[in-house]
Length: 284
Image (cartoon, rainbow, N blue to C red; front, side, top):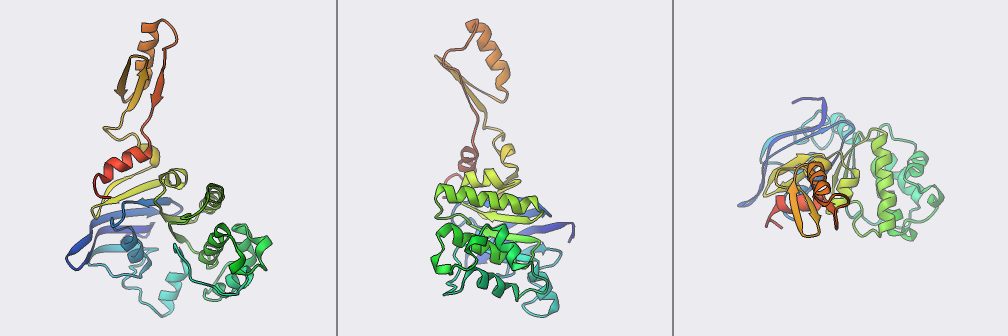
């Protein structure tokens, strides 16, 4: 398979007993791209990511991650270690790190990689320099999530998997974390993000991939999804409304009709949430 993409998947299948979770998934992620993977519970998001990480076997299809097949790279040996060092994984719930400090934790994980980033630099990137000597148990939820990202980045990965990174965050912590992700993306890090927050996908992703019923039902930039056929702009005014692909001619016509400002004029464009809910239908 091609090596010009960080991730390339064709015809991915996965079954658990008689239940088919993935039924022919295709997925491409270019180097430096941020892709959000969306879908209702049971859509196959976790299975897809675990297969890409090499933590779960597949039942069919072709997979290439950083130029190698995760199922063939093996669990040990020089090739496996080199491949895994190029991947950073930030899981939804990290294990207890006991009484270690932030600095001790990042330095500990750095030892697992052949060419890690400077731990102090990584701690600075995630905004925890002033917490370097703070024990993990004393961190807030948002600070702990930043530490999880530091652990995922210290190996200097080319590809980072973020699993529900802001679950449980308050609005301020979420916004701060978004800034961190944008910083990583601007530095050229490839990111696959799974999230239930549609505003998060819209704010961070270059592309949104929607899984439903074990298949990809949409794959496009967030702004393009809102322009899908059947999701038109709604122009409303006092006494009427019209759906249209292009609101400008409608507004011009109304302005002429009312010979000036249009009373009660509003223009409502479809949101990513509108399109998403239509795509997944009754599969929630």
